[in-house]
Structure formats: structure tokens, C-alpha cells
Length: 206
Image (cartoon, rainbow, N blue to C red; front, top):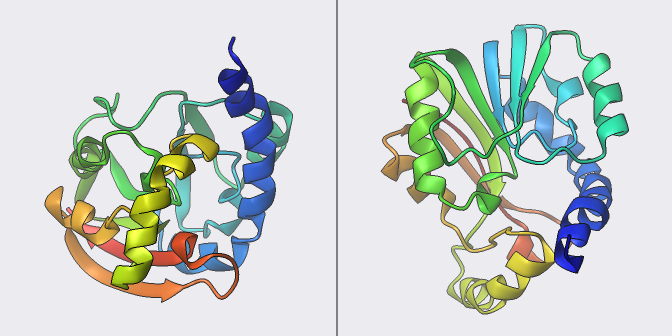
């Protein structure tokens, strides 16, 4: 195992877990709309679990990494619904039938999927008619000056943040995959660098 593999598996996950806990105030507005059988793309360390509503019957948690195992197991054990973990990336053929899920959720995940277009097409396939894709992501700024800096610094960001891209236009990716945007909120986080704080929060239907 190389140094970067060690960094990716053992150094970055605790840092990410600590950083993403600061985003908890933004999770409920997205996740409170989930219902029924839910597929979560990019489960990470399970920080979303406490924010799902009682309308959720089950959670299928997709993520290729098995990081911070004890911490995640504790969070899964505290869930009010059954959680099935699936250790695989999102941009291949998903091992689920068409129309399998009532909701698909993503929180700060699409930035790090290698082929987001393919991943979104698969999400649309497994989401039932009338179901919703619920998401909050960071991405490309509408300010040309900020966007230029995002493009300049993105190669560094991809290395430091293990594949995370700061300059993806999230709404365009969702639409291009065949989803209809039901709602989209754009806002900037009040703290931290703007290049990482341009938010896309919304809901889309297949």
C-alpha cells in the first residue's frame, strides 16, 4: 500500500468526518423529504442517519470505502430503520432492479464520483416513477471570477480531497441525466473559502 493509499484510507476519513459534522444544520432540509425505501449515494461515515424522518422504512447505503468502521457501526446501530451497506462505487451498474427505491439521497457526494453522468443515470433507473432525488452538493460558482479560481485550483483539490471536484455544475449534471428539477436553491456558505462554499440544494424527479 502506497503513501497516498494510506492517506486516503486512514488520514483523510477522520478529517472529513470532523469537517462534515459542521454541515449538520444543512442536512435536515434535504433529508426530511425522504420516504419509504431510500438509497443513499456516498454513505461516508453515516452522518445522515439521525436526520432521516420517520417516513423512511429502510436505507441502502452505497459507498466504496469502509472507513472509520467502529464509528460507522455505532451510528448504524442507532438507526430507527434497517440499514444495508453496499461497498461499491456509484458510477457502475447498480445491483438493484428498476424502480426499486422511493427516494435517492446525496449529500456532498457528486463532486467525487468519477463519472457523475453515468451515476445519475443509474440513480434515475432505480428510482420509481414519482420518487425523488434529494441532494445538497457544492459546485461551480455563478461568479466568473470565483469559477476561474475553481478551475485553477481543482487539480490540487482532487489530490488533497481524494477525488473531490470543486467546479462541477450540479444542476446541469442532474438535468443532463434525464431528471426534471423540481426545486433548486443556490446559496453560499457564510464561513470558509467561497470556492468550496457554493451550494446546490434541491429535489428532482425521474
